[in-house]
Length: 106
Image (cartoon, rainbow, N blue to C red):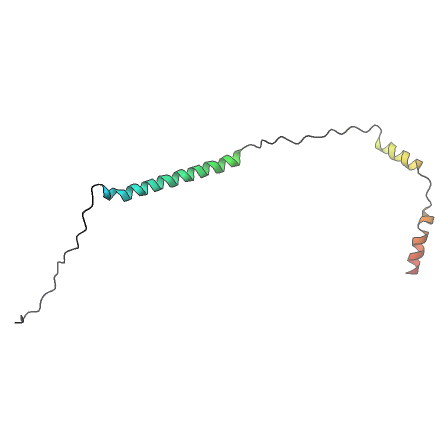
């Protein structure tokens, strides 16, 4: 027969039980996280140290050698004056006569 009272839902459901863990296995996640943080800090420290080592390394290349040019034997002005005096007289009007004629035809 049916009972006149409706059945009440179970108000205290039991939680499913977790399987028992082995001894020490509850700390493995924490240990792995700590090791990962230590490795990341070590890698970051090495990178930082190498970056600053490269920035502060002194330049070891020797400075360029300066070629000592011999001093001119004579004053440059006197050499130029001598070359001008040695040149034959140039008639500029004769040199530009052809150019002037071409310009007049334009």
